[in-house]
Image 1 (cartoon, rainbow, N blue to C red):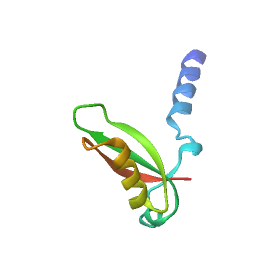
Image 2: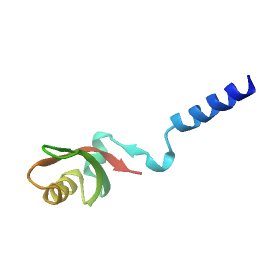
Image 3: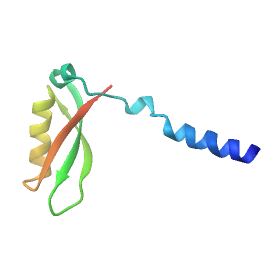
Length: 81
């Protein structure tokens, strides 16, 4: 029984989101300057997550889209807190 409780505690610890990776995905956050996080959808290669500094979400998305190339498109997820 003690072993089962230890395993459950370990699973619960990994299930709780880490505060260091908290994102603000509110509408207001789109207009803030900072590190914006994106999920980059790609055709013909693996999708990935990336962050990009920008004066707002649109400028960060434009910079990241240039880096990602014509076969990928970054979709905004939020701004890193």
